[in-house]
Image (cartoon, rainbow, N blue to C red; front, side, top):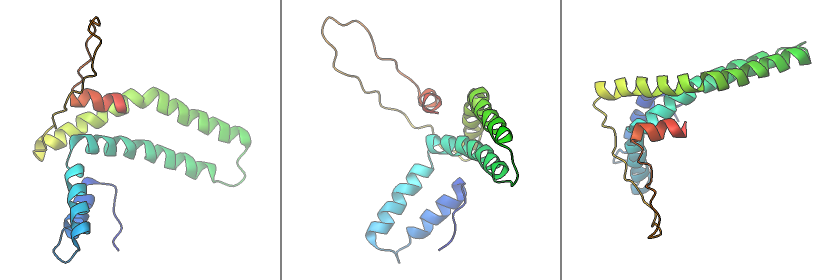
Length: 142
C-alpha cells in the first residue's frame, strides 16, 4: 500500500486509483465520495490550516524529546506553543482561506453554496438567523 501525503493531489490520485474497475463496488463508491469531498474549498482550507498547526506541534514534540531538558525549559516551550496558537490563530485562518481561494481559482474549484437551515420560530419571535457565507462558516469553524 502506498503512503498518502497530506496534500490534495496525493489524496485525489489515490482515490482515483481506488475508483478503478478492478475494485469492488463498495470500494469504488467510497473512493468516489472521498474524491468529491477533497475537491471542496472547505476541505482544502482545513487541510492548509492543520498543516501549519501540526508542523508547529511537531517541532514542539521534537524539542521536548531532547535528553537532559529541564522542566522549566519544557514549560517555557509549551507556553510558547500556547501563545503561538492564541496569537496566530486569526492569521493562520485568514492565510489558509486566502491560499485556498487562490488555489481554487487556479484549479477552477467552485465555492460550494451552503443551504441555510432555519429553525421554526415562535410566531411572536422577531429575530432572524444569521446567514453566513461558506467562507465565513469555514473561518468560524477554524
